[in-house]
Image (cartoon, rainbow, N blue to C red; front, side, top):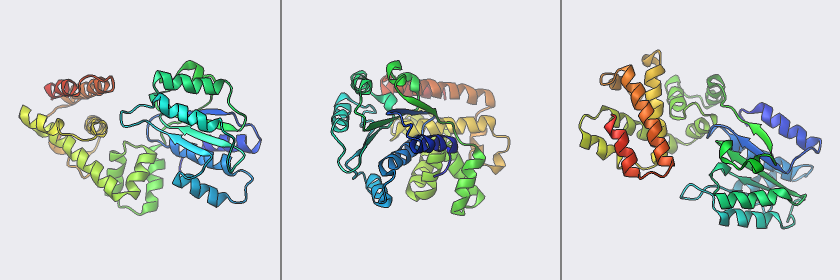
Length: 304
């Protein structure tokens, strides 16, 4: 596994010295590998001192291990009480094939209030064989009483050099590596996914080109046509902000991506790019605060 060496070493030592706690919180920026570390840790817990490790790993990877569960946000981007109740019910049952049960709540900071309260109640008196790992981008959105019951591990983004080192294993040329770094926002987990999945890479690059189109269009109706028809608005906003930051900060556009971003600089000066970036951040906040999508996007368009 690439990156997060300190966290993995700490977790491994805790397991080997029988110092596991029953609840962990892994927090840090999105898509930097928190979930992968959580899953790797779950594998080690469930296979510890077991001679059949490979089979256990395969079952976990396939989602077929009876003592391992993962819950994540639903299509409305939240974790509901029904999901956490089912999870707690599973965890309260005795282990089926191992001597432990492990669950991951991925993006736990997206639990509803009622879902959070059900997890808190479980954490107040968990069965001795149950272990739960929460991942979160923003730990401050979790109940303080949940945080206080967890062993907390902070995850920081790996350096650009570490990501490049990992990408060099794929024998890409420099241009492809630059494109992956840009499209991934220098996030290790996402960069590796883009390196291994050509379809995902092409989809994300296409989305970045849509962002570029939005910025270079002159007429209001043309901008509306681009923005109002965007699928996966969260990714679009992320890439739009990445382009703006790149144009503001990049010292040498000649050694940049294959997206042809120089054309944007013909239309906007640095001050205007900074102002648009602020408006993108505010629009993203509106969208995450459940402001009407059309109103939020109109606010963005007015500033372009």
